[in-house]
Length: 106
Image (cartoon, rainbow, N blue to C red; front, side, top):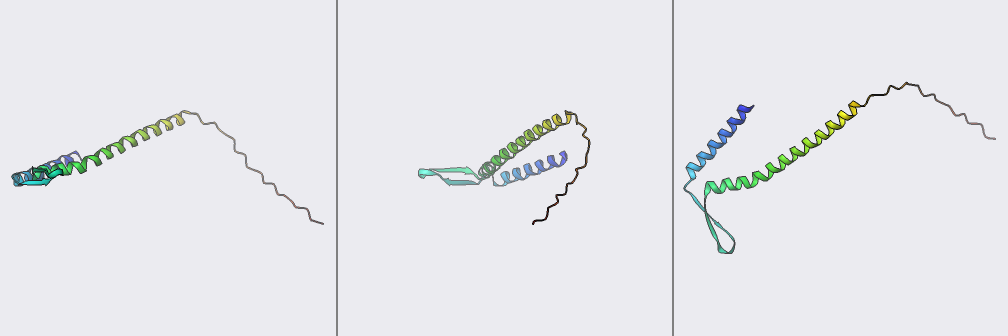
């Protein structure tokens, strides 16, 4: 599994490197507020936009994982506490049914 992770990251890095090499000299003009114009490299712009969308989701995912680990740890502690309490044997006694008899009305 670790090999597949490394292979995936290497392929992703190769695709990004190829894109940067092929489009590295292209500039993009971005209109900002109050007539300001920013000239930025196309690969840099795409990487920044990708990270702006990816990083918040990564932080949310890691937060969710941390919360679930904390919840599972609490549940495991509670389960261990319950297992440490000895069970009291009880004697089973069947319930007796009583039948109510109605008296006739006069």
